[in-house]
Each structure stands twice: as C-alpha cells, then as structure tokens.
Image 1 (cartoon, rainbow, N blue to C red):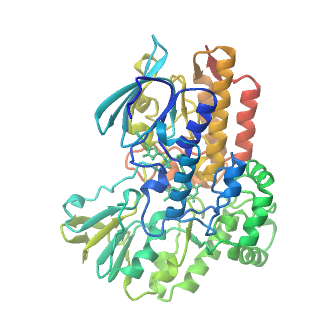
Image 2: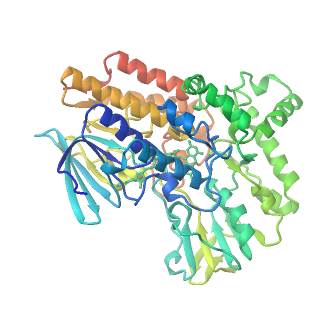
Image 3: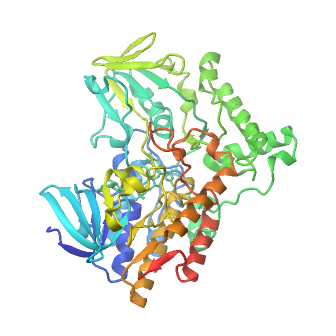
Length: 535
Ligand code: FAD
C-alpha cells in the first residue's frame, strides 16, 4: 500500500478515537489516512496485553454507540471486558467499517509542521519503508492519553539480565512466569490488575510498593444475559442518558451529601453500594470530592475492607492508603487484589521506608535488602495526557513549538484545539473530561463535535479554524477554577503530572462532568464557534 503525498485529513493513532475519526471524516467526503505506530488497531488494548488487563467500565457501555446495528450485533461475554475481548471488538469495528485499507501501521509520526503559505500541515513519519511526508489540510491527534509508557528512572534498570517487561508495552506472545521469581514495581491500576494473575503462576512474587492505592472490587463475572438484553432493548435511551451524566455512564450520582447524615448512616449507604462493584461506590454521595469529611468517611470504609481482607496486620497496614483523598488518584478496580497478599508466595516490599537504590543484572537492591529475580514487571504508568503529543515535534504558526507552548502545562481550548495551531484537533485531550469519564462516551462526543465543525467550515468556505489566545486562556482558567473547587489537586496524581519528574504540576482533565462539558461545546458551536478565529 502506497502512502499518498496529500490528503484532506490525517489522523495519528488507530485506537477508539482514531478509528471513529476516520469513519466520520470519510462521511464528510474527506480523503483520510491514519498513521499508527503499532502493527494493529486497538491503541490501549493493542499495547496493554499484561495478564489481568481489563476495562473498569461495564462492557455494554464501554463500546461505540454510533451504529445501532453494531451495538445490537456485538455480544459481550463478561461484565467488565478483558483486553483480548476489547481487541477483538475493535478489530471487528475496523473490518466492519472497512477502515483498515487507509491505515498505515508501524508508522510513527515524528513531526507535524504548519506551512503558512499553503495553510496545510506537513507530517513526517517513519515507517517500515523509511521516512514519509504527507501534506494534510486537517490533523487529528488521536494519540491517546495513556499511550506514552514510562520506564522509571532507576539506576541500572537496563542492566537487568532477566526478563524486563512494562505493562504498557507487553509482548504479543504469552509470558509464562511458572517457577519464576518475579518482581512488580508499581501498584497503580495496571499493577493491581496484574499482581493477582502473576501471583497464581510465579514461584515467588515481590511487590514493590511506594504509594498504596485505593482499590475496590469489580465483582466481575460472565455477563448477566437478562441485564444485557434489557440494555440492548433500551440502548438509545441509555446512551443518551450517559451523554448527560458526570461520568458518561448511565448511572446517576446519588443526590445526597454524606455530611448531611451520620457516620453510621453513611456506612450503611457504602455497604449497600459496595456489592454493585467498581466505580459505583464513588457516586453514592454528591460531595465525596468536594468535602474532606465526606471523603474521609469513604476512605475509612475502604481501609476497613482492606483490614478485613488481609490477614497479616502489618501487610494490611502497608496496603492502606493515607495522605490523599480517595478518587483523587484514579481509583483502581480489582479482582482479588488484597486477598493476593494472603498467599504464601507473595510479599509486599514497602519502598517508601526502604527505597530502591538500584537494579542489578540479577535483581532489585533496596537500601537494606536485595531481591533476586528472574523477571521484573514495571507497572509505573504513563506520561499521561500530554506525553504522546509532546513526543512529536509539532509546530504551528510562526514555527511556534507545542513543547514551548505547553512548557508550563498543557493549554487548550475545550480540550480540542490549541491557539496558534490551526486545523489541528485533539481527541480527549487535556482540558476535557477524558480520563475522568467513560472514555468511549467522551471520544464519540469529541469526534462528532470536531467533524461537525469541519462540516461547518466546508459549508461556509473557511480554510482554517484556530482557537484564539483569549479563548484558550479563558478555558485553561475555567478548568483550573473547577478543579480547585474539588479535592482532586490535593493528590499527587498523574492527572497532575506528578508521576513524571520535572513535568509541570497542572491539573489536566476537566472535572465539571461529561454532561456539563457537552453543553459547553454545544453552546460554542451554536454561537458559530465562538472562541475560534475562522478564515
Ligand atoms: P489510545 O487507545 O491510546 O490510542 C492511541 C494510539 O495512537 C496508539 O495506538 C498509539 O500507538 C498511537 N500513537 C501515539 N503516538 C503516535 C505517533 N507519534 N505516531 C503514530 N502513532 C501514535 N478508559 C476507560 O474509559 N475505562 C477504562 O476502564 C480504561 N481502562 C484503561 C486501562 C488501561 C491499562 C489503560 C492504559 C487505559 C485505560 N483507559 C480506560 C483509557 C483508554 O486509553 C481509553 O479508554 C481509550 O482506549 C483511548 O483510546 P484512544 O484512541 O484515544 O487512545
């Protein structure tokens, strides 16, 4: 397949965002290609093949809603879909909508430069046949919020002679840990999903924990067919409801403040929500992220559950998170995470009190111990929300570089456009609900909003659309103000860039909720794309 020299629209990334973008852009009659680093579609679900990788949103809702036949035809097998099932689904979508023929795989975009004389983007990539250059009128950056995996800066990490694996760059073939001494560094979402699975195989598992995270049980299982049939029968209504909720799933947050009732009554509400599984616990009161007392109640409740599950009191105490609000860091959803520490072959190493000093060819050395290992799994996450964009050299008007523009933190208008970077759009970018929502709902909303915008430009004969500096500044301030009204910025989370040394500490996602955000975007469109300079 030959790469064209010129297209109307160029999409970077073949995950859920990129594929739907391609489908909608084609619908506008625009010639479109996708350039994708991996050798297949799927994005997150292509790269994260570690044991236990699973979505935290229930399968009927973590799926596209744009095509009624698709959502009626597809049969989910589990309540929460595992990575292989998601990858199968997204491959099905690629085939069903004939998307593959315009996707260039194993092709990494290294730069995108706006040429003011032609008002087009020059996009340079490196692929299997070397370098390529494409000229595109529109650039859609569907590069993902959690696609830039980070290796930790631990001295000696590359000297390890055993198997070194990052959860976000997992090999395609099955990894067998049978009989091995395995270490896992990192106890965020990926670590918490992988640890119970690895523990079942490994001879011995050492879990290196710096910060304990809050995790709640998924109560996963085969999908309840009666429940799924009811969803299918009501899909249009449930999807529409999801679009106007806080998180992009069709459950309403209970409209009661925890502080308005007694501690005993709160506990009763938590107990009632606990068996519902997953994130449901965090929507049982409306003030959990606004009021420290309410948040402390839920934190205490979850800490008590950890204590009830883990038999060794010292290990239980180390696994209890303190010092930040629950859901201030992404709440983890697990299957048997805490119970795994009751296994004889699993040890928790507290690297806050005994820090890792180096990795040697044969294991991990802390200040006071050495752990010999055959395999080391790194689950330290991603340079979230901005990492993939900043790995490329993106230059807008006057040669201005995105790296400089975002030097003090990401700046966008509505999370979709950037001042000085005409005709370039981001999907689920910083400044939008993104990682605080069911991302499928947010991705569809962004793709539809952007393609409606492009249809408007075409209809009116505009060549370029560009967020103004003032609208961008106003949006950045609005996003900051909203975040400051919550407890979110009090946690050292990846939402804030705190996991990447030297990254500016700016709270990146929009906390106002999916529905409110959508209304904002619709208002902007209704006011003929207020805040954009159209030429
Ligand atoms: P991605 O799926 O990240 O796709 C981006 C693609 O862009 C990648 O394939 C990447 O290779 C490509 N790319 C990036 N840079 C370049 C470049 N320079 N050149 C070429 N290609 C490039 N979301 C939820 O809503 N619920 C969940 O439960 C949930 N669980 C998750 C679990 C894990 C382990 C992870 C990592 C993420 C999870 N997410 C979850 C977030 C998830 O990323 C989104 O739901 C969704 O898959 C994002 O789709 P995307 O297309 O926007 O980005």
